[in-house]
Length: 418
Image 1 (cartoon, rainbow, N blue to C red):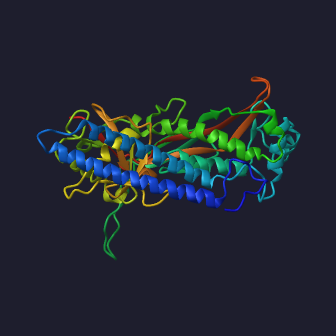
Image 2: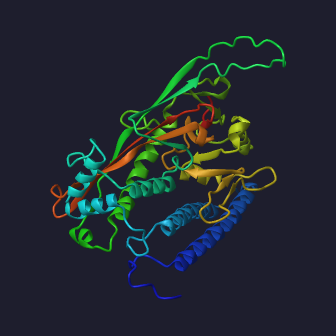
Image 3: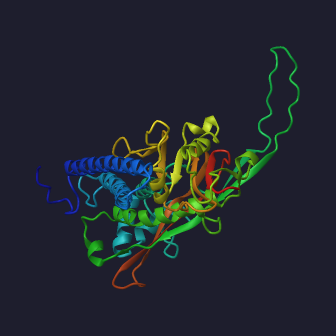
């Protein structure tokens, strides 16, 4: 392998190095999965005997399950790292006027160029007190990173707005349509009844800190640095809100809406299927419950559907087989792809509840049609060199909203009896 150019940061790797890391990690992941299947089969065979399962076998299976989770997380991190640009400026496009002005503000607090740009654009929302908008390149980069890190955002619909609230009308009674002959009279249709869904945007913030040496280093791209620093904080907070947020100063998560048994489903509520056993899957034919959940969703939604559950629930589902002895859970077919459960992609969202009595620990649906993420355009940064001397803080904010837009597109599996 050729030596790395001296201009690249020490922590970066060549494209070939990243490829070898990903290839080796994926191979290790598949090896662990084969060992997991072999151990689980051994445990199932032991359960069929009078003596029951061996404790050592159970402990080994648990260790392998945890190893699968850790290796999958490492694979995701390696894939994200490979896609992440380096912090240096080599081979980068020429910066825009706004980018140069923002760079001067970040490094030294000199906001004269930014103020001039605001005046030229007749902007009234910026300023030293409220911070300055980041360049469009940086905002786009933050959006890409969030799509990769935030599990629900990665499968939901995302819409950008310039106002504080997105209002979306929908028909309560459905469209008024009918069949008529070529020359037959067209009877007057009933007036459609419309209602309105509202998706307000709430402020999300992060406050990364920088040292003086980082700000003085001209090789470091500060736009890239700040997008890297805020991505994890933004993704963690919004990921939780999209699942369990109560809608107060944060988006409303899909688990915060009223739920109802699928047989009694109505608009404004999310339907669920019952396992029939409190806090667990049934002992006999547990895969049948997952099949019932899949087919509780209408055919038009199933083609783009995803499973959503946390790591512990996935570990339990990973052990299930169909009647032919095939595992329902299958590992990713390639690096960067998702694991599959019964032919549908599985999204791991740590903010989903664990399996427990009456817990809705598994969601299944077309989240692209079911859940809407609303981003207000503009990410704002306020430079603060005073609050944490000798460090410089960068108070970074963006406005995000979210909520269910189609209550028929998401279904839940409830671990209970009623």
